[in-house]
Image (tube, rainbow, N blue to C red; front, side):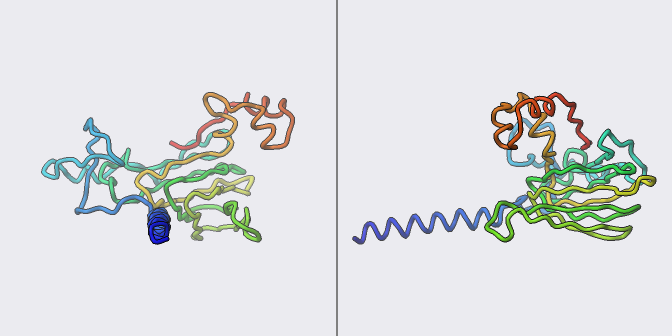
Length: 231
């Protein structure tokens, strides 16, 4: 009848609106020249409350980050120095951040995702083997692995939310890259750390079933120290 038809149309419209919103969701666009984050405000919003523009100065857009200086790498052989809104308050609402990544010989930035950002990476020194895996979409593109060897000056893009990595294949020389990310706070989820180093731990029954291995294998993995390489 007409009422059922109207209800179906309304439901369809709501679903389409939700899909459209999800398709365009990212950091919100600024509605003024800038919105320097007021880190001292008790108000909680998606991002940060704007500082009074009369109190803003050039230092709110600056950090002596020394990104030209090498960093000490950790046991997986990398160090990510991220400059986001927490380091430069002026990045609030601007939808961008930057990172320097140092790789020891045979070091890697292990498989991880950025839940809120696409990443574009350029190699400054050395060689990197990089790649990402597509999502659980219908075949033949389900979990497709795309990889490339990058040399100095090369650029590669990692789409938002997809698992990706970088590896320095040179056993004798370090490598350095700079990455730009399309969020003031891109976030990082290192897969091994999240799965095996969560607090509290995920049940070994769950992980043993998920990875199709014995529980003692999971117990051994959970007993390791999962070091964070993001600073």
